Length: 270
Image 1 (spheres, helix red, strand yellow):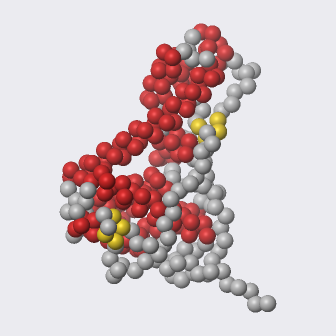
Image 2 (tube, rainbow, N blue to C red):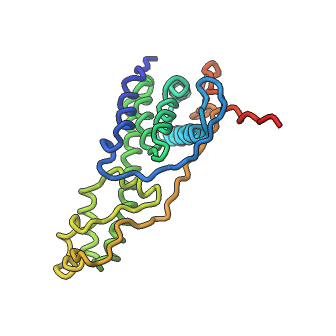
Image 3 (cartoon, rainbow, N blue to C red):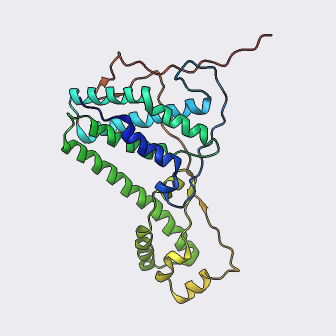
């Protein structure tokens, strides 16, 4: 099996980590905040509780998408074995360190773990030569459908906010929806998932408004709320570092060592 060198996709991921605005446009991404507590740990193990939680989240997301891949692509045992072995080896040697370096460098910031996992899995599927183009296309269709539904959820909430603010008719709501679709940014979904609905700016939708609505919306003395709370929360799946990735009943090979678990904090002498 030919495995594409890690550097090819690592550059892509690391590049987006170094400059998140290049991926998400100009919208600030709400943070996933974790308080770090340093642990004594063996080599290649998580270095603090924030790092440990982040790795468990990422492993949980990978396993969740592996389950979805089997539903969409129906991998045979050979394909399943090659895929989980590749992911486990990449995780052990490179992948987890990417997330560790990012969370350590951005202690007050958040990471869109889902986007990075989806990007990595697309690369891994390309690197397993026994997986067919039809199966890869089936997974790409799944991701496209997933993203389309994400847009509908967020834009629906933004239209609802605009309807409440400006008193839109049903015809205007459809026009506003179309205008927001044209301006869609991936960062909007990340904001919504972390509890904030993006502002529906007056300038974006003014062409769909009546003269009276435009006058009200352009009034600088009016009280305007820029962001609305959606009630969203970060609740990512979690998978122990001691549990192997599996798909279609096939687990990664026992010859691939798992990452060490973090050691418990040293107890002080009385």
